[in-house]
Image (spheres, rainbow, N blue to C red):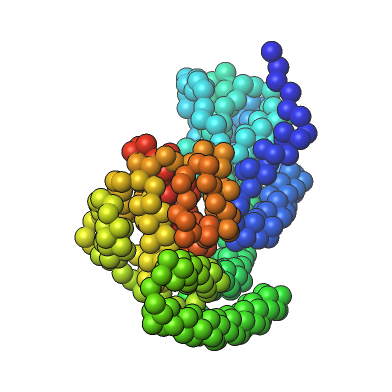
Length: 448
């Protein structure tokens, strides 16, 4: 059964086989046409010029050998052969010897370029009627030609340049050197351009993860510098927006907490009644809600990146869940570290661990290095869990899955949203899955 490759499938196959990097594709765009041109020029040279010159040389050599054979057959004596050999040596640069009673060898080694053997064989067959044998590979500087006569074998050693255009390999060498030189120059220039794009991508990635990029400067081609300048302008606008938001949040936090503090003080001084107790609970819930709103709106808050030991950080965060009555176990290598914004990561892990403490009694927090780089933190609980089709819904801000898990009365549905926002701000993510303990597993992945 013959398989037919459709055009669409052939196109997909070509795309999969092409380089995926900008460096590889740019190099292919430059080198492939040059290589094709070099191959075409070399092919034309060998087919039209080198082969034609070799054929003419072979025909001239075959004519000289035919003259020597015919002259000897006219007078097949040693004296006649000596005269012919002497004339051939002086006039034609041919070394001749006569092997009395010998026969031609059987078989011969083919030349590297088949056109050499074909041209010489065609020329000898057209000029000599007697059986002949030749070898173009045994001697580097000579061609060995032997002709069978009734008296024996006439052997002729001819200089190689009399049968073959010996300068062809020099042309091929120059073409190869030119291709390698052009390839080296292309690699040098393309690498410089790609390096500028890689620096821009690295700076954008670092800035996206909250790291400062003070030493980044636009380099490379004009278009790349324009993109870098646009990135720096965007970075400045975003940083200005973050600074303004941080200042605004600090002011709002102060302005909101001042009346709350006054109300709490007045209730503390008021006569304790059932009504004042309910008001205190309302104020406490309002304060908790404001804290969550501000934490969600604050985001990264301009915090710097530090390398911290994860086990110590997780144990500090877990203390709150332990005080709330949950049994928390932490498993992590003591020397496992990560470059993170510590307070932001603490806030994210605190939300996940406290969420697990609210819905389960036993919590297991595991931190380990990932095989592909980075770290992974697992938070498992033995609570009721969440249906699989509602995992993504749980990450939506202000989402409360009351029917799946008994949501904390104080919660406003921002815990998972804050955790994912923090993880993605670090270049990672948070996902949910079924825990081996029977409840919910929250997986925090952070890059290396």
